[in-house]
Length: 362
Image 1 (cartoon, one colour):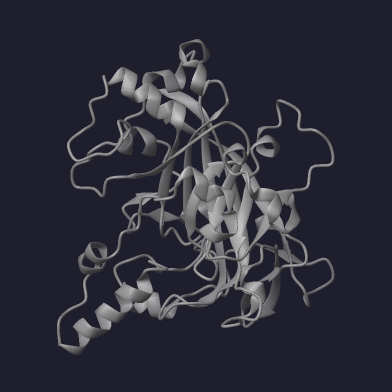
Image 2: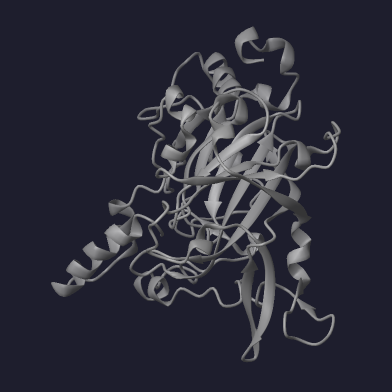
């Protein structure tokens, strides 16, 4: 896994030096991949501090007001991307810039490159089954040129994925963020959903859980709620510099300091376009998929992570959504039963919810 993996790698190297076998379970014990967000309401008045002190703000380029039916545009996220401070350059500055995917010929295949002059989010509309009811999911993917830090996880092409499950009234209810390799999957839940769960389960949390929506699953890594998301509107995703981990998620109504950050606009492209990417330097008009036949990004291999975590499926290698596995390859990211399996979802998520909401959280 990435980010804290630098710390884990140091420990692993120490273990190797003493002649002990390196195991996946050892790494799982040493890394908290679902850290609770410890920020207070006042912290969001200075959003750059949340991602290390310096940041840029990526906002959707919408030419006209969003129609009610255009859900992907209505909830397209604001990305607060951490960057290195002015005068600091421990890695190339474009490593922290979102961009459009291109390919170039390399060997018998291709290498993916990111054009940071044209920021883009790739989106799709999916669905999930909760209590036998199909709910809408909005998926947003962004790409960066490289993962520039760490002992074994450095490599070309990095990315992040935000998936939002809407309730029956088409309001954001559950937010999931995961790295494009499947690492660091984390869950954030809308405040009103936890309120419904408290009401339905009479405020009784399962043993050892912090929220009523959390659930114990035998023989699996439980999902932990990292934070509650307050208010309505467009989500704001805070992404760290270099490591590109999700530090926090809130709505723009809960982040009053957003206007203090320099802004860049991004275009919205359909995720399916990643199967028809322009090949720069190829034949005229040539296109190809960003992913090789195994669903892995061309040129995105992480040899260090593959060697260290040999039991994982190409550990650390960014990939296509339907080839992504999460929680140490425990589950497929596109499994439509995940919320039922790993979350204690309240019944009101799938029913007529508006009239039952307290006025403070409607």
